[in-house]
Image (cartoon, rainbow, N blue to C red):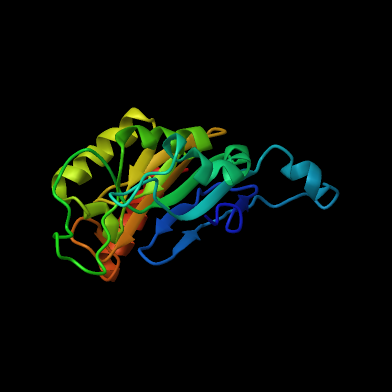
Length: 212
């Protein structure tokens, strides 16, 4: 989990960043408008208390048919929990589903096929670790078809973890009085299409209108 390495501090922002989550990589796209400072103003004093810190984590899964980690997966995130919880907003790419529900995409004789489904209760581990929102626009979101996709959404909702990535979907988080919009993109039919530039631009522009 690369939760700490891609953290970003947004200081003096009047236009909130829109987090664009891609299938193979993640990037934060921001538009900043910084008020002109008086020449005598000290930057540190000007910025104090105005920053918004966003922590980004990479691919995470908390269980599969091949085995589930102990203690609902908490040991997997314990090392980065402090960094995630210190952030104003913490987000990561969740690869997999939360069950039970759905038929695995991998048949009995499948080779080099991986389907991830963790117990529904493991979704609460994300909240425990400090995660506010996950991207679900990726290949493993549909490992157990529409039933597994739906059960994952239900588990995340019960755990009070936001999610984005479905077609047309935008998720907003308000912290420190600032609204931040998240949208997930990938190459699969259950996600926003990252290959359609016009649709990507339109969704990001709509997300920006929903943000501060």
